[in-house]
Image (tube, rainbow, N blue to C red; front, side):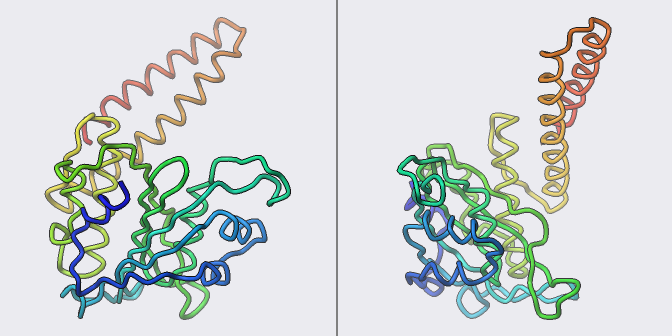
Amino acid sequence: MLEALISALALPASCRVEQRVPKKMLIENGTPTAADKRLLSDAIEEIQWIAALKPNTVGVAEYRDNEREYLEVAVLRITARHAPEDGGLSTAKKPLNTTRMAELVHRAVPYPVLLLLAAPQGLFLSLAHKRWAQNEAGKVVLDGAPATVDLALDLTAGHPFAQALALNRQPQASLLALYQGWMDCLTALQASQYTGTFTADETPAQAATRRAALHRCQELDLRIASLRNTATKEKQMARLVALNLEINGLMAERHHVASCL
């Protein structure tokens, strides 16, 4: 499935790098804690630099403004394994924290990254925008939380998501626009978990509306789950009725918001 995902990107030979990257390069850059360094050291099997998307390799212009510059987009593939419990002192295994690993990779690489993470529990695709740090000249930081999605689907060449990922189907105005195109593909995939059907966005405005609706749906899901958990422990009938009324109201709002996906 990993090779199918790489093929779906339809990257031209002009941008392919196919170079192995020492994991110490990630460990030494942007890893704030000993636990994070241990996670990268213990859990990463291999890092492969698949491609470097630059104006001279894909024919898409760089992007610069006061907040950010996108001179290059890196495509990385990481093969990971289970991390040992207790920092390697135990033989027991625990599920890999793919969300944290993806964030650490994005923090360590100075360019925006399209990350393909093959972990024991599945295949993940992760992207994160970058911007200039406000208080440190020349330093690049994440612009919001990374979008990391579990690709729990049969990624055949004919799958709409696979077709939508192709490089030549992304916006070509700049590397920022191209990268946002891939971000919008992830949003559309997440939206399909609510709608049951994957449909790519046709315009930036449609993509922005979908992002806002998806974010609100996710917020509502968390709130509903919390209220349901509270309701299972509630012993006062009046309070239980109030909780159920609130849940029903949020469910109605969720149904309405999901219609925008």
